[in-house]
Image (cartoon, rainbow, N blue to C red; front, side, top):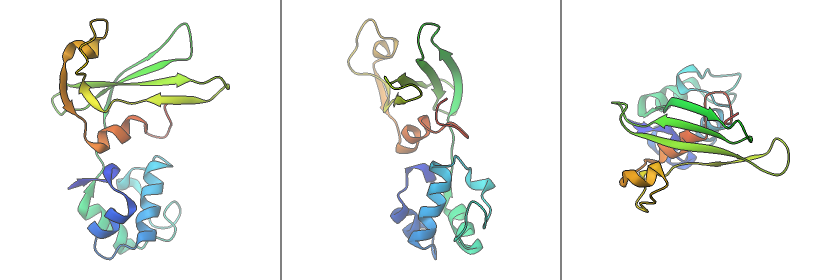
Length: 153
């Protein structure tokens, strides 16, 4: 099964027989913009314009894996927040995501990891001291900015 978070609407429509491009866009919008989980989506309501057969075809071809939140650390000095996500099944490999405040109140940018470890080897950085372990899969990068029901509060 293919991770849903790594698919474009075009790829999802091609992967799931009978699913139109519009339906694929609606499914991805519900997942990415509204934080819905594929298993909880219902035809109608949040998925207006998606047929029951199309939703079943999507569910039969894709999965929606999730990262585990290992830790959340808010700075005591400023609005920076760091999340540590577990990215492997045995819990040994973690990556960090940081919410960085912008000048305008309530606005942020998010620094996400694209690799586990780092090839730079900076001695002051815990990630750099690990060395490069591997590149992350597309869905693992996307999921760092998509905590369930929120946008990294």
